[in-house]
Length: 75
Image 1 (cartoon, rainbow, N blue to C red):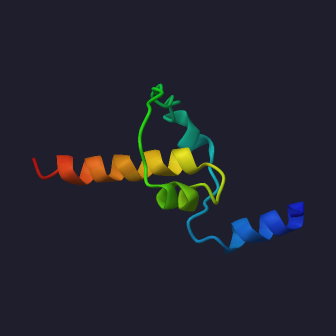
Image 2 (image 1 turned 90 degrees about the vertical axis):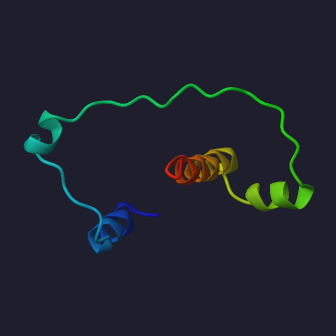
Image 3 (image 1 turned 120 degrees about the vertical axis):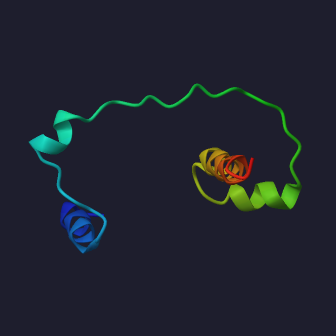
């Protein structure tokens, strides 16, 4: 992918906005929480499906976090 392609993609994205000095004035760095290594049994077909793309562990984590947030709101 060329720089031109990337710039065109950004320009076409309605959610992409340039940042200015005002934006960065109150911005703060938020470090991700430290992850723990766990052993977990998953169905083989489920794991194969997730492993088709890079970052599958991050995606599984995001799905579990969304589930947790949805259920925490009910309690």
